[in-house]
Length: 359
Image (cartoon, rainbow, N blue to C red; front, side):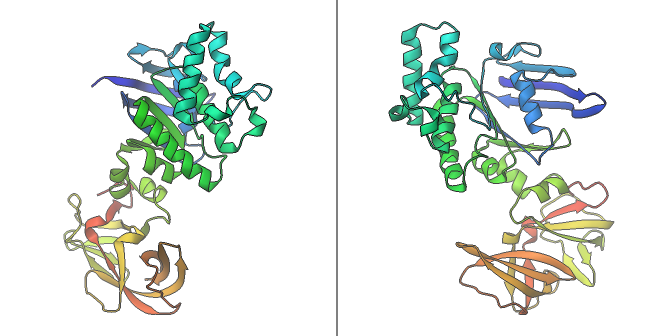
């Protein structure tokens, strides 16, 4: 496969502090990769290394089949969109879009063609003669994307471009970026801490922690089959429910306090007996019923019923631990109601408590 971007054994140290550690990443031509993780995990740092804004300590960066490890940002064939719009306030939108092209001494008719194309793709044609101060946040971000678009490059780098916008605008711009990728089919690397952006935009997600990629896979795989406890807990809102216990009876049963849950339906590897294990279940993979079902249910008591619009989130106490369950919004649950919660073990995740790796 031809890789649009290849990162090979990339290491970045700031003094004695190791920020990125022997990181490897291959991005296919036309792929949309999202770098996802909490603040300080190294995702923006990795993007800045790709852009040439940071000098790496060791390793190589290849873009478009060329080794650009020490190339200037302008020679890497990339367009970058930042969190801050970084527009020139004294220039019109047209001026902002054309500024870099004029500095590169591009012919005027080519500049006009590229500006018109970017304006048409991003639907900012009527705004070309306005100054940034007269634009909304969403319009300014479209102009910032347009400024990268006019460079006519193969690779676009986005550094949390929607984080300054309100929820409605973020949702609208997400659709625009998805549409833009579908139309252009350029390679895009997108940094965010917002899991909704990652799950909706990405062909593959790289979940990062401490300068290391924890898992790199398709969004649904990462959501349904997280590789370790960190990935499982980071993705999902609310977070995955975790039960701490052990696997007994040759790994056929999960023991949780006085409760025993059959692992017969678990879709995983050889479980074996483990003195410390963690069973993870997402709120939508648990159902509430009145009847006890030995081996697949737990007794619980409703604490809070939280209507969310399309559905409700019920918080319960089960075995001395708080858990969350998604239910239809019509199925109201009064606090204090005793219930039984049933688990869909085919959708569960089981982790070794020592290594925190998926079993």
